[in-house]
Structure formats: structure tokens, C-alpha cells
Length: 462
Ligand SMILES: *[C@@H]1O[C@H](CO)[C@@H](O)[C@H](O)[C@H]1NC(C)=O
Image (cartoon, rainbow, N blue to C red; front, side, top):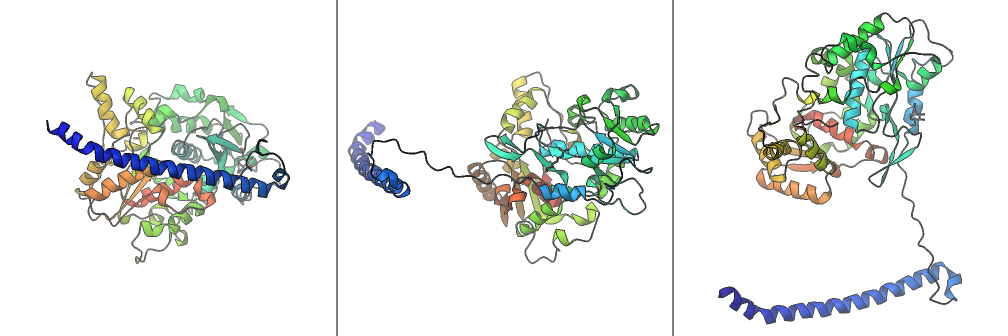
């Protein structure tokens, strides 16, 4: 009863309003179109005087092409890499003390996270074998092009690693007393080594019992290379990655190598590049209380990772990957993917055993909460963590994300409503210069590394 009578009563008013609106819009639309066509004519006639005299029904010329700036190619970084002092370009073959190892089948066409974890292990393998690590470019596309298309956006096909990182992996000094030969750039290796001894991945498989163990793989190569005198060694390009997706997706893969890897200069002297540190410093008031006496990162004298990138009290970072990850998480759920190797280290507070209840739908739903959580699920998790001892006195929150602005606004509002924060920032708030824009993920990683608490995404990312 009530609804009908209400509708009856309200109908005329609403209709009137709508009609009024409609008429108003109609008027607007007509005036708008008239103005636009007028403006168009004036513009074209002004721009193309020769058209002014011709008939209006002639086809209009296509609008001028507005060139968007192309992504940076970072040539100066490549040139600086070639000028490293350990490169003795005047010689035509390796010195007696030079011994190289190049992993030619390194990953391509995969994200920075995948490339970086592989790079760390390849560099460590060379280090442990006492050889110069041969570093190349971060390679999105190996087809020789300068630019590639990524979801309709142009990106550089190759990025020299020194754009993102510094330290022994890209040829900087090892700590005093460590005489491992310094890393060299691939071009130098190619110049010194026209002939190479080439191994394939399977050459060491007989010494390995647990094929995903990063330690067994590293020790296997160490043993294999111990008897090799030739300075020029590389792994075959077509035998692929030495440490591959199976390794990085296996929660046990990193367990036995972690103590030695984390104590090696590959990690203890790992650094972010000056470009990335500069991006952090530029945006530091998002992360650090402005009055704090904390010196800017790029002015730190410290070479070690632990001293240089100290934890920032009060800062929490969360990694919220969106976009392509929705479909990807469905796939990962369907194969009950574990937490990835580096996310399953002992000492990390979060553990996860993918559910295998026999009900695929229920299992997939639990898995999704780890891989592609909803806004309320993220809010709840952040609240839980703030109630732990580790989450005490958090005041600033940084959302590392590829989500769009509407999504970020929704998440930020929900987080701000639930807990008190001095500031909530996201990847899209950072002020980045043109060179930093294309390596912004490394800036986020540095922020995440320095946070008092980081909530990442533990599920593997092949
Ligand atoms: C690495 O990238 C630079 C451009 O940034 C390019 O000049 C160089 O040839 C690349 N090297 C290899 C081995 O692809």
C-alpha cells in the first residue's frame, strides 16, 4: 500500500523535475554542439588558411599528431658501466687473474621481482665459485628493439641494472679483504671471450638430489667449476635459468642457502642505485617525520645494507598488487600455490599452507584472501598487525600498488576510517622524475625495506 501511494504522490514532481532537467540538458547540448562546431571551424580555418576559401563539405584534415615523450633508454648508465675500472679494454684477452661466469639463460619478459631474485642467486653462484659475475641488462624484451609495448604503454626493452641497483653485483668493490674478482659488464666479457666454455643446466643435475634446493644447485656449480681452468665460462642460453620458477616457487628452496647467502657481500653490500635513493629522499617527508634528524639516504657514508637502510619507526608498507594479478591469483589458487621461496624463510611471522580440503571452491576462496584480498580484508589485516607488538606506534602507511586511482581512493578511505594515521600514501603519490618513473617498483622496494612493518604478498609470482 504505502509504496504505491508514495509513488503516486511523488510521480508528478519527479517527472517534472526530470523533464526540466532533460530540457535543460537538451538546451545545453544544442548550445554545446553549436559552440564546438564553431570553435572547430575557427580553429581549422585559422590553422589552414587555404581551407578557408574552399567548401565546408570537404573532409577535414586529420588532427595534428601530438608526440608523447619516449621512455628513457638510460644510455649514460650503460656508458658508466662500461667505464668501470676493472674493465681493461686495451687487452684482447683475459688477464691471468680474470675468470668469468655468465649465465646466458637469465630470465626475460618477466617482472622486476622475478628478475631480481634470480640476479641475486646468479651473482652469489659466481661469488662462491670465485669468478667474476658477468651482469647484463634487465631484459624485458630481447628482440633488439629499444622500446616495447606493455598494455598499450611504451616501456624500455632493456634497462641497465645499475639504473636500479648498486653494490658488488654491478661491479662495485667487495668489502676490504675479500679478493673475489669484481663483476664485469657483459660487453666486456664478450670482448675478452670470443671463445667460451659452455655448460648446460643438466651438466650438474646428477649431483643434485633435491632439484629445487638453491644450495644444492649453487654447490653443484661450484664443484663443477672448481676443475675448470678456462677463464671464459657461460651457461647455455637455451638451457634457461639456473634458478628457475620451480625453485622460486618452492617454500623449501631457500631454507638451507639463506644463512650463507644473507651473510655474503652479495646481500650485505647490496645497495639501491643513486637514482632510486634520490627518489626516496625526494619523497622522504611521506615516510619520515619532517623534523627528524635522519640524514638523507644518498648522503649516507655506509656501504652495508643494514647500516644504510635502517628501519623507519612508525612506517608501515603494504604491497597491494592489482590488475593482471586478479586472473593470476585465480590460477595460483587453482594449483594451490605455496608462499614463494623468499617469503617462506624462517623468521618471517606469516606462514601459509594452501588448503587442500577437497572442496576446490572453498580452497580457492581461502587462497584468494592471501593473493588478491578485498578492501575489507586488507583493512582487517592492517588492524590486526597494528595490535601486535611489532605494529606498535605505526603512524604512516605507504601502499605499494599498481592499482588505479579509483581503487586507491577506496582503499585509502577504508583504511583511514578504520585506524588513525598521520598519512596514507600510495605509489601514485610519489614525485618521480622521468628516469625514475620507469623503475618505480624499485623505489617502492626501498620504502618497503625500510618500513617498521611490511605486509607483502607471499604467494609466488611466476
Ligand atoms: C644493454 O642496454 C644498453 C642500452 O641501455 C645497450 O646499449 C646494450 O647493447 C645492451 N647490452 C646487451 C648485451 O643487450
